[in-house]
Length: 337
Image 1 (spheres, rainbow, N blue to C red):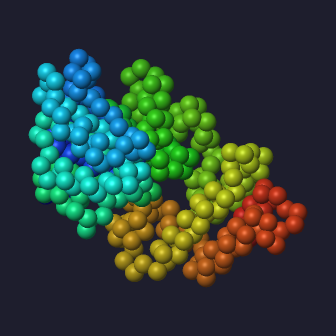
Image 2 (image 1 turned 135 degrees about the vertical axis):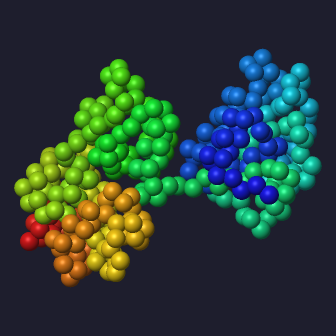
Image 3 (image 1 turned 180 degrees about the vertical axis):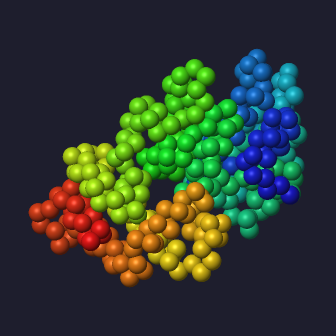
């Protein structure tokens, strides 16, 4: 049976150890696309691709057509590669278990089954696993793991990033790894020659994120009760509402104060244990320590209630006139006082 992680699969591919079937499923398209692209580009030479690389699409094919293609022998090459995209639209996909019982060693069948997972109780799942194939579930990364992923991605290319710049990217781009990797490549290209560290200034200059006026900095200002900085940021948000939607800001504030409440309740507040319980990078535990010092448990509970109230107001419930900028100013005042 084979239940490999992305890095293990990548290592096998670099060693040209190929499996007969790669069933790539899950809700994170980045890893699915990376594995598929590698197999498409590197198994066959350019000359071999003309006769031995086939792409099928789930909306236009079925299990029988896929099996017929997979059972062909390569022409003047060691392998043929058959890539099935959008396989989630194939109604009789389970019938591929027939082929998976005796897959051709000269065929590499790659199945993209995005935004769904293959039921482990089904015959297809177990047959692929039993016959040296791979069923790989590509999972979305938790926010706490994104900084580590970003630093690892850059390290593999000989670069690094400071933590503030890293968190600016996470806050601005979310958990879309494809989008993050594209922006990282842009940053690498724009760095001056011999410069190997990406800073907040680089992010601000090349991606359009302000290193001083963003939700990450607002959270830090509120956590440390820096009244002047918090109000400066809120005023900036009010003038730039298109780039700083209130819903995103409220979500970030909820993240801060819900984690602060959990921190209050943790008995063992060592950095390692707190990071594990909070599901955050240990680097950020000090932010919650500070917020917990500045806001009592009772106050944090009240703030969470305020966030729910202002979320409703921002959607028009119980609010007739106040705009998003005014609502944020009111909310921040009540949080700080």
